[in-house]
Image (cartoon, rainbow, N blue to C red):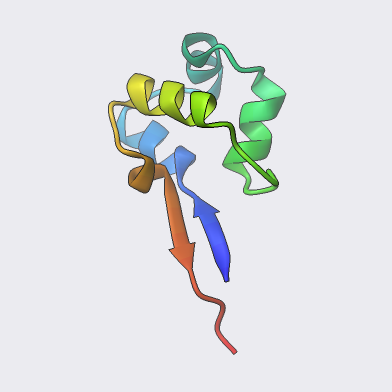
Length: 70
């Protein structure tokens, strides 16, 4: 089981750079990069809320569950 983070997909749809998202959300560039690459172990609801507001999307647009293939 894996949670896939699709922040980069939503950023591309909104034609927004990581730097711009970082400024608008108020999260460091390095923390957003960790989230974007799927290396994050957790995400705060307040951060997820801010990302959704800025990207005008739902949490399900950003986080996706994919079952591992055996």
